[in-house]
Length: 223
Image (cartoon, rainbow, N blue to C red; front, side, top):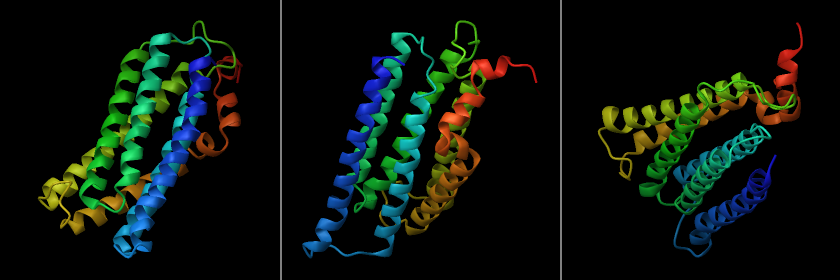
């Protein structure tokens, strides 16, 4: 699928390894050095962080694999840029698990970056057709639908974050005393992540079969 695609597949595990390593170090080192404690809020942030990391990792791998073989260098570069930016934010979140004043704000920034990525992808692919695609490429309709779904999840998450913090609790995302907003947002991120896994279970966990059944060739077969 191109050198950029292969490069992305190489970079993803490297960044993921750094993210997990630094998350564990920044979370547990203060505890072992007697300068921190293992509190329930801390473990909840750690849980939702790893849940989000697993979700975004599988999503990024899958989304990259939806790219057709013949794709302009500009779009490939754009996808790689936003992929890299997204995981840079993930890396910052990994360092902030023990710092709620940054953790929740960075979660919002993460979804904002992701939403911009998918918004641009929607604009660029809105009028795309299957013309010129290989038979084993994913159909344009499927790609567009997937992009819309991910964009919708980002917008809903951002809306929920704003509603919870600004409207319900009247707090900033960096307010360490907004425990009610923090627990509500953690619960929401958990629920929407599990719902995402359930609704796109074949995409996440049976990708080869999912892709084959939605390819241009499969769409062209008479039913």
